[in-house]
Amino acid sequence: MVIFIVVFAIAATVVWWRVLTNDGKHGKQPAACASSSKISGLTAHDVQVRVYNATEKEGLAAGGQQAAASARPGGAGHRQ
Image (cartoon, rainbow, N blue to C red; front, top):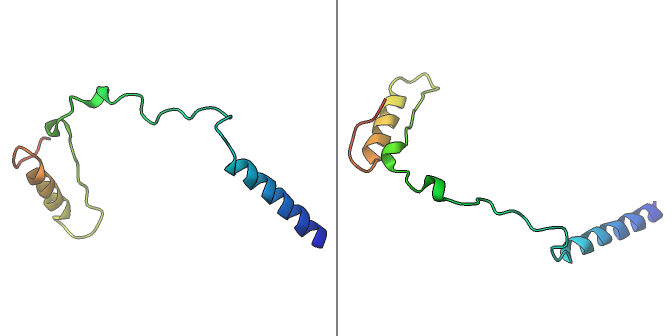
């Protein structure tokens, strides 16, 4: 049992040593997003939000949709 614990401790030490001393030899990580120019023309009027009610209370989805529409820049109302 003691031999197993010693071997496990040595293996864990080696693994953590390699993790902590990694200097990027394994390749560079790609950028999360290559460019944001594809969505630069997006406005609040281009976004459509649909609110669904999964409860037994009626009117919650309509209230949520009205709140989202009134919070949108440009006034109240919504597109369908």
